[in-house]
Length: 88
Image (cartoon, rainbow, N blue to C red; front, side, top):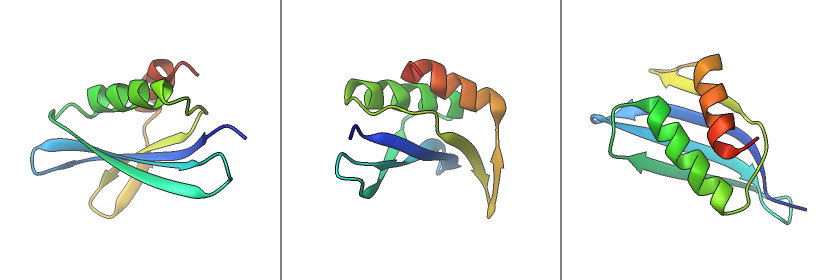
């Protein structure tokens, strides 16, 4: 079984973008990884993380949501940018 993305959350924290990725590893265990990117541009941060994940062989078309306070919302434009950078 190849590592497969489940969902991606993104938000701004202390002036920089944070991207949290949840994926199932090769054994089927759910894993979580958080990336702190040195930019306020959440879309750019998502693209950078997607490229890193693609390099590790992680694939899929996860739901990408933007976190603002306690609310989560799907952002179709950000989701498309992530999928494109991932190569999905």
